[in-house]
Figure 1: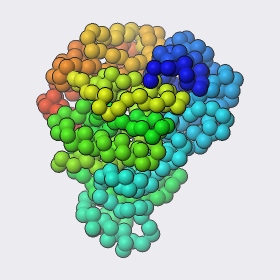
Figure 2: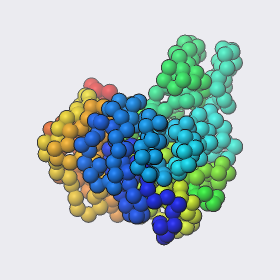
Figure 3: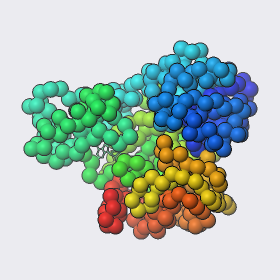
Figure 4: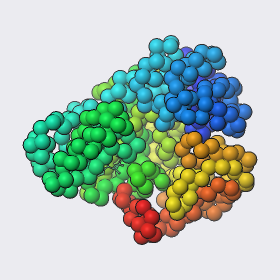
Length: 457
Ligand code: ADP
């Protein structure tokens, strides 16, 4: 991958905002590509618009009228002469109609083929594809549940309680319900179905074994349009609140590296089989030494930097090059993992109640020093709008060992000053000293249990 000038596009519209808009802009610049930032009215003063080669307003603050407005984004690409569109994460990044509309407009969508987004966007179809490709999945109903209650009861009993009901079209941690006995089953099916219809416009739900103490471990993949696929290390994202990741790390602590390599190989092989192209993430629950696939994300993820830190590979630049038809130029044996990386998501929110706290950043001091990286779009004087996600920065550190990474993160957090809106840095500082987290390998309930002890969940 050394000939960026060979890409078939020279100009990329970034259909996103915040830190990822800046991250994509940087990848474009390193490849000599022109970057065009699409922005909503409430982002018109965002500092990263100044460093873009061009910026264009796509509508008012509500996302439905701007960052989710396919027509407005395509018009913006037309007006600015952008030949490719990068969707970032969230918003339209996993929207099949958007990917298709970008193709239909004659532009390059920086992401996988629309068909892959469609299959992976339906968790029932995704699990079926993974089972066929030899990726282990959580035991469950082979497909969406039918209307027959006796059949549903039989499936749940066969799997064994507790089970979890999940919306086939679900995402963002919504549309899931744990069921501990048959007495709760039918009511839970009805409510989850209604929620699935309401949130995701798809009433299909399925059933899985509920794992009591799993860790969240995921595998990053990169696949080119020539049939080659590699996996780039693993990440542990078990520290979650309400299914939202709070701290991520790479590699996952205390898991046998040969087990990780085996599952990584399965993921790469699954990509070759299904003809996947681009960056993607296979999410697994890991319990008692076994991996269980739960879903695949067909986009760049918030936590991609920890993988970049341990592999030295620029994942966003790779996305651009792959979309431009370049071969990976990487073999699995070329990919090493060096040291350990951690990422803390810094949100403008109350560190105790988690209530969002948008507003003016009166003062800002960003940490530095060896192994420290800060991905943020905010500056002093920036006003965090209330219309969007509260994440304002990602603090990422790398160390030769996990202990060194932990020490660097503690130092980085102590140097960070964000005056004005409240932020969750104090929560991170506390977690970095939590004996369970410091020891490594906590399960996905660890953070909520800690918060419960404080009387907050
Ligand atoms: P979403 O797409 O909404 O994020 P996922 O399928 O990725 O949904 O699941 C989100 C989270 O829900 C997981 O990280 C895990 O915390 C929990 N979860 C999902 N499936 C199970 C399961 N079978 N057993 C236990 N926890 C689960």
